[in-house]
Length: 257
Image (cartoon, rainbow, N blue to C red; front, side):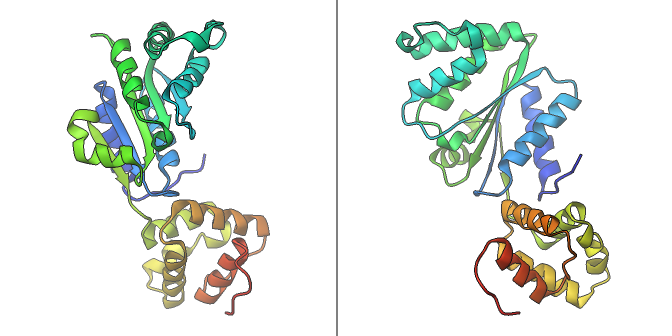
């Protein structure tokens, strides 16, 4: 299994898991491409490895009508038990039906990724459902993944004490984290950390060039590494070579060395 290195991921995971184990809500936020989904999956994996109860994961999508999104979510939770006249059910009834199903299924963690796309009122409805499902013996916790430009993320940062117990914010990757991802994900870059540790000037210039090109964006680095792996040919770790390969990988046109 490939391990992804993100800035402060271990610290964020530990803080989020502490809140989730006590039945609270937690949010992971970051800029677009910062690795929020990767972080949520990492937290889910740790939850399962620690013996946590079942996980129900859901990804929101652009939908301005809260009821329609809630109906879609209910169809995933209820499956064949979804009422035939579901279009006539109010939000409160759908939440009641889902709460009963979640309780009997032994779910302990709800995960809503791309919560920034959910319409107003939807997250509150999901939080209400988690409260309805929780008992003294078993909690149902909520993990939210969202992009930090969203209205919800701004509200959570300002009022986290009333909305969520923990807000973990992913920062852009620093050069050291980029080097670790490169070394782990691509054989031709496996020696990068050692070169940087020995203060090899060519390697230092190359990693700084990559940091400048990517802006520390995890998704862009992951896409770049995937392109290099698909090339099946070694890439020299120099500033000029990295710059040329980067522009090729994103089809940005000719780029002089």
